[in-house]
Length: 289
Image 1 (cartoon, one colour):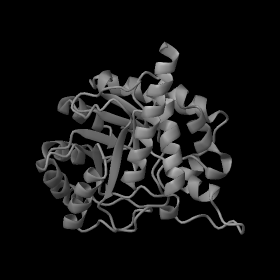
Image 2 (spheres, rainbow, N blue to C red):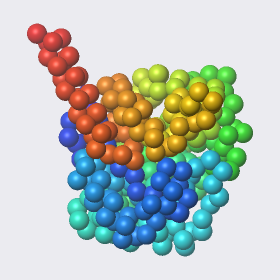
Image 3 (spheres, rainbow, N blue to C red):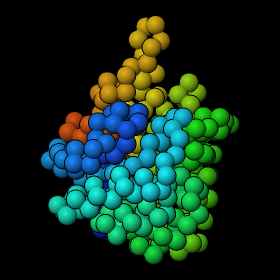
């Protein structure tokens, strides 16, 4: 069963969100799309490969990353969003800043993807409410430079869902339509690979779905996959070499009811969600017969 969000594609299956990092230092692609013209071409390529949404970000949130200035973030993302939106691409903006979100929506973005869930910039919920666009609320406990020190849980599923529920309540009180909210468990953000926080959340995706909002799963190329696929000497698999494991998670998350998966390598993940949809449809027909 899929959930429709106003203003975004609704193909009757889990959506695929392709990533365009307009940054020189993102963990997954090392600045491959930092040039704006290259970023625009990459975004269009992702659509041709099966992306339903293209997520444009101008600030790295990799572990240890330092923040860029507001001016620099705007310089990076606005021209890319404008160009992609002009081509009819459904664009989301990946930002923690209300001013960037506002400019992005004015430039054609249809969704705001905020990894801080409104905690980094208290003005964000009001901007989203005024813009009346869908809003991804991610579980977050602090900025990238110190988030690993905050990854302390007695019950990671219970605490993440409780904290997301609290954020949803606060955001709705600021005027955001609850029907436009999407939740993200924040895989890799204040979640330690060695403590299995990410795997535990994925295995209990139903608890996140029970919050009553569509769920975005963003596992692509993250550290916990590199740890899983480590060499015999313990050396983690390079980020870009964990795409096969990402595809497996995509298929499982789609089958479990995820609304959308956020990925770097679109084509195989688009194939995976279609396969999961066909599997689910066949199972539903069997149950009805």
